[in-house]
Amino acid sequence: MASEEPVFADVSIGQPVYDEDGEKLGTVRGVDDDGFYVTSPSESRQLGLTDARDVFGTAYVMWRCWECGEMGEIGTELPDSCPNCDAPREDLYYWAED
Image 1 (cartoon, rainbow, N blue to C red):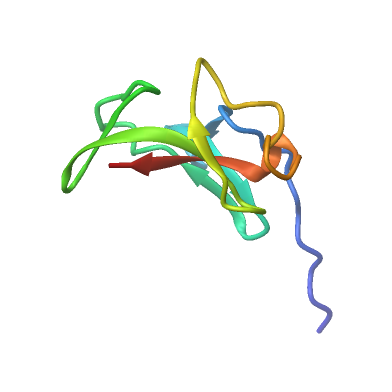
Image 2 (image 1 turned 30 degrees about the horizontal axis):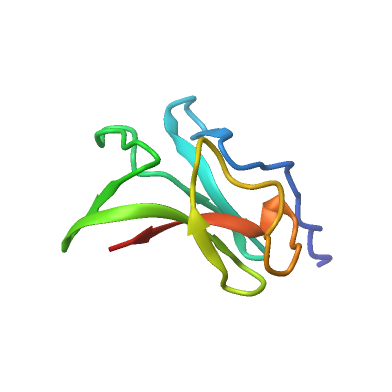
């Protein structure tokens, strides 16, 4: 039996993600070789870009580079590329830092 080829979708940071029933799951917050990461479930309270909550208290939403690990503060959006290694924006993802 021949295996099926994987299907790849064009996914970008900030894009809404829906389940098969059309219910919004959240928005894309990061992309890597294994797939993409989605914000909290839709029933969760929406957080701003300047801060977030985690189980330990207050955390700050930063960006982090998948290639080199560089981190930085988010202004109104992610930078166009990593200022440290010039990785493309697709290699940057949201990171909660306390």
